[in-house]
Length: 323
Image (tube, rainbow, N blue to C red; front, side, top):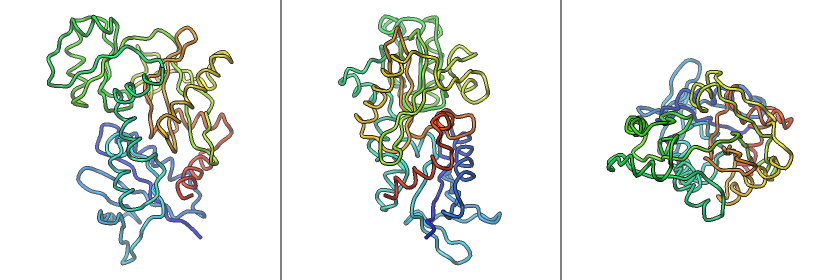
C-alpha cells in the first residue's frame, strides 16, 4: 500500500530559499511508486499544496488538504524546513499533537539544539570541549571591553537561534563589535559571541539509519572566505573535502564525540554537527537537526561517500518515522 507523504518546505526565516531547494531534492528523489508525495509550502501568510498548477489550502485543524473534493491526510511528514518553525520544535510539536508521524527528532530536542547557548550549556556538563562564550540579549548594554576580556579577538558574533551562517561576523577589532552585534540582532534577539578557534573545521553527519545510529564520513571545510559563511556554504566559496583529510586517530575522536552528542540529546533522524579540531582535540560548535539537503549540501555528500544514495537516505528517514 502506498503511503502518503507531505514534504514541508519554506518556513518563516531567512533560510526559506535553502529549504525550498532541499524540499525539491527530497521530492525528486523519493520513489513515486512507493509514496504519494505532496509538496507542502509553509509560509508566514499561508500553508498550501500546489497540484496540477493549482493552489490548495491546508486545513490547519488536522493538517489535511482537499483536492478536487477528495480529502487527503498524510501518513508521514518529511521535514525540510530549516530555521523557524521547522527546526526549532514549533512545527514538530504541532504534528505531535495531531498524532502525525514525522522525520525529525521530538520537539523538545529540536528546541534545545536550535538554541546554541542552551546546547553549549548542556554539553559542557558532559565535558564536551567548546569555545569560550559570551551571551547577551538584544536590549543588553553592549560592553565591548567586557566581551573582549572574556572571548578575546578575533571572535565570532552569531544570532543564537539561526542557521546557514546568516547574520554571523568575524570580528578582529573591538570597535567593530557593535556593528556585528547589530547585524546578528537583525536575525535574533539573543546573541552568542565566541572565541576564535584556530584549527581544522570538520562537519560530521550522524543519522538514524536502519534502526541504528550511524556516523557518516566527515567533511573537511576549507573556506575561500574568512570563515564558512553563507557564500562559502552555498555559492561555491569553499572546498568541502569528503572524507576529511585527518588522521585515523582524529577521525575516531570525532566519531566518538559526535555519536555521544547525538545520544546525549536523544536525537532521531538527521543531524550534522560542526567541530574545530585544535591540536587533535575536537571542539563542538553547533548541531543542525534539519541540515541542508540540496545538491551543494554536506549531508547528502557524506551519505554518498557511505554508499547511501539520496533515494535510500530519504526513504530510510520515512521508514524510521513510520516504524
